[in-house]
Length: 257
Ligand SMILES: NC(=O)c1ccc[n+]([C@@H]2O[C@H](COP(=O)([O-])OP(=O)(O)OC[C@H]3O[C@@H](n4cnc5c(N)ncnc54)[C@H](OP(=O)(O)O)[C@@H]3O)[C@@H](O)[C@H]2O)c1
Image 1 (cartoon, rainbow, N blue to C red):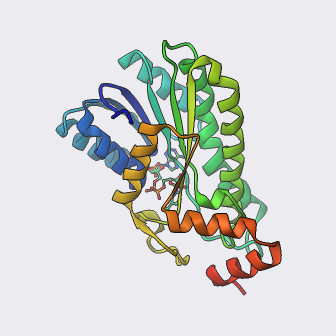
Image 2: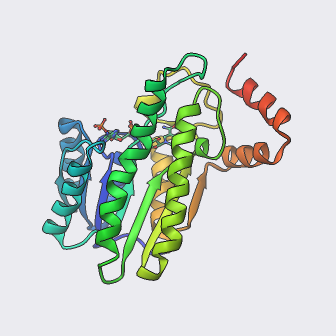
Image 3: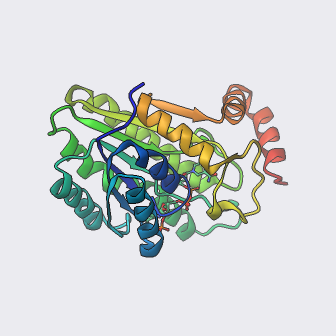
């Protein structure tokens, strides 16, 4: 396992939660960071912590829904540091959303907030990394919810599943060019954003522990990383069960019906 040191690390969605915590943990490695998110003050506070820990950091507020802004962040990273060695595409969110209460607009919005925000970075990053000596790593914070349709999280599950498929294809196509892809599937993580959403969260872990798993995935570069193991095992088991059985278990777990 290679520790991440002296590398240019881009984190999209670094103003809070798992992304901010992963940045803090990587900041002790003497890396060069480019961090981005929409909330300027929160992002600046994370940047200050990174610098205090001994790493260089450029904080660039930008909306990942804007393809030009995303391409601009990648270009600014390269202009400042010459390359992007590790990118963590972490922006996303999955609110409580039952299918009998959503509008078409809700579903499209969740798709954009979890799919478009990745695509808008994925494409310029592939262009950059395939031309760099040694390529680079593009990691995506997906979710165990992206492996199957989770009640009250349908649009989110669907969006995360779509990104996983896209990244799986990119991994195959870009391997000859040294561009590696890691999809990270956390279970429930106790971040501030999901704190009051009312969804049941079996086997929930802390943000610090989740970030340690993320950093480990960035170091080891598996194609897919799943954690924590009890939730990952539960999802794997549910996928193997006949649909009526898994549906009954999921209905119970999500307190539906
Ligand atoms: N918490 C969980 O239980 C859990 C479980 C599995 C997977 N995940 C995934 O983990 C990732 C991080 O989530 P989290 O729980 O740490 O929540 P979070 O604290 O809300 O982190 C999301 C980050 O993404 C940024 N972001 C969101 N939309 C953006 C946009 N349009 N443009 C730029 N930045 C944007 C947010 O910053 P701004 O608001 O400042 O833009 C924030 O920095 C997400 O992809 C989520 O789906 C979370």
